[in-house]
Image (cartoon, rainbow, N blue to C red; front, side, top):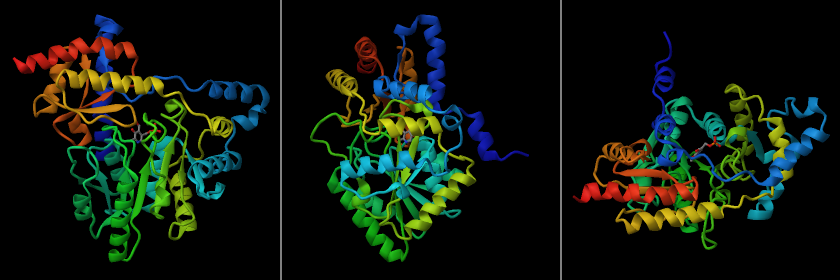
Length: 395
Ligand code: PLP
C-alpha cells in the first residue's frame, strides 16, 4: 500500500505542467511561432553576465573538491554574510549570517519553514488567488490551508482575513509581488496585516507566524512601487527568498530563509529550521551556487523586457475588451475569463493555440493566468488570436 497523497500528486500532473507538455506537442505539429505559450513562469531573460562570469571564475580558480563538496547544513558563512550585508544595506535591517539559512529555492524555503513551525492539523491562512503548490507544501508538512476569498482588485480582504484566523491558525503566507495577479502589497496593507496578527496572537496567547514568500521581490516595474521588507513590520516573520526569478536561475535551486533576531524564541525557530531541512533530506544548498551568489549578491537583472511585455499585454488585452488589474510586478497578469467557467474558456483559447492557465488552479474561478515571461514577438503575434477569441464570445 502506498501513501494516497503522494500517489495522487505523482499521478495527476499539475495543470500548468500539463498545458506546457500539450504546448510542446502542438509546437511540433504547427511550428514554434504558431503556439502562444503563456503557461509557465520560467524566466525569459538571461541571468546577468556577472553570474556566468562568476561560474567560470570559480571553476577555473577554486579547488574542485571544495567547489563540489558539501557545505555547512545552514550554508557557507561567506554567502550568508554577504546576503546579510546586502539586505541590511537595502532595507536598513541588522541581520547577520546567523539569521540566514540557505535553501534549494523558494519551494524548499517554504517547505522547510512550514515543517519548522507546524504541528499536525494546524492551519495556514492563504489569500486567493495563490500559487497552487502552497496547498501541496502545507499539507505535505501536516497542516491544512484556510483560504481567504479574493477581492476584485486582488489586494487582501482584511475583514475576511481576520475572520479566517482561529484557534488552529499557526501561520499566514503572503506573496508580494504576487503569482498569479501581479499585485504588490503596499506598506499600509502590510501594516494592517501585521496589526491583525499581533492582535490575534495576543488573544491566542501564542505566536502566529507570517511567511513572506518573495521570489518576485525584484520584479517590479514602476519606481513608485516599493515592496516593504516584512520583518520590519511584524517580528514573527520568516522570509522565503529565491534567486529563481530575480537572477533567472530556477534550475540551479538556490535561495534562503531569514529568521530575524526579533522573532519570539528566534534561536529555537532557527534550530527548528535547521532540523526541518535535515528531516526533509536537503543536506545543504548547492555549494557552487552558494559561491556564485556570494559573488553576485548585489547583481540585478535588467527587467525592462518584462516591463515592456507587461505594458504590451495589458494595453493589448484591455483594448480588446478583456478585464484585468494592471500588474505592478512579477510576470503574470490575471484576466477575467469571458465566461464564468475558466476551464471552458481556456479550452476554447487552446483552439486558437493560446495556452492560458485556468484560475481554478489558483483557487480563483472566473479568471485565467497569463505568464508574460515570453518573447515580445510572442505577445505581439498572439493579439489576433486573443481578438478572435473575444469575437467568438461577442457573436
Ligand atoms: N512561490 C511562488 C509564488 C512561485 O511562483 C514559485 C515558482 O514559480 C515558487 C514559490 C517556487 O520557486 P522556486 O523555483 O524558487 O522554488
